Length: 274
Image (cartoon, rainbow, N blue to C red):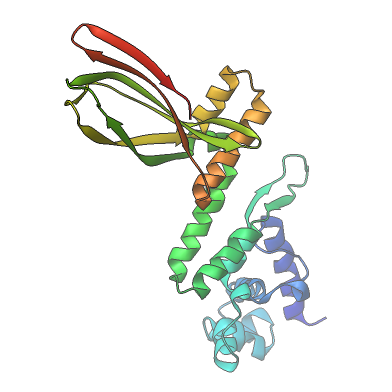
C-alpha cells in the first residue's frame, strides 16, 4: 500500500476518534471530510519534503509545497460543490458530538440535526445570506435541545381590542375587569391568555375601545391546567398545541370576563361567558 494511503488511513482513524469525521475509512468519506484528512496529512509532512520524509514527489507537491492545494485544485477543475457537501451543511447535518460516558474507549456519539441542515439549504435557496442562515439554524438546534426549558421560554403576546358601551345617563367606573381569552386544545376549551384591568371611566352614553395586550406563556398554561385537575402530561400536550397554533397563525380566540362596575356607592358585578 502506498505510503500516502497509509498516512491517510491513520489520520482518518485518529480524526474519527475525535469526532471530526464520520468514518475511519478514507474512501467512505465525503468531499469535505476527505479534505480535512488531506490537510492533516499535509501538516505532518516534514519541511524536507521528499528527502526528509520519504514521501512521493507528487504527494509532497500536492500536500505541502502548495498550501491549500487539495481544495484549490478541485475548485478550479470542477464545478462548485453541491450544497449538501458544503462545510455549513455538513456541520448542521452532523450535529453535536460528544464522548459517550458508557464507553470505556471514549466512543464518539453524534446527535443528528438533519432538519437544521435541510432548512439551511432551503433558506439559502430562497436568497437568505449563507452566514445568516447557518447561524440561524445552528442556534435553532441548540434551543430545541433545551427541551427541559422550553416551557419557560415560550411566550407570545396577543393584541386584543375590547369594546365597552355605557348605556346609562351617568358615568360609570370599571373598577376591575378580568379577561379570559379562550382557545381550544384537543376537544377542550381552555384559557390561552389572561389579563386584568381597572380604573376605567366611561362617560354617560359613550363607548370606549380598549387595546389589551395579553401574554400567552406555555408555563402558565400548564400551571392553570394543573390547578384545574389536569394531569401534567396532558397539560403539557395541550399547552404545546396552543403554542403551535400561535406560531402557525391558526389560533382562534373567544372571550370570557368578570367585571365590577360602580357609580357612586353602588357596585355591581357581572360575569359574561364566551
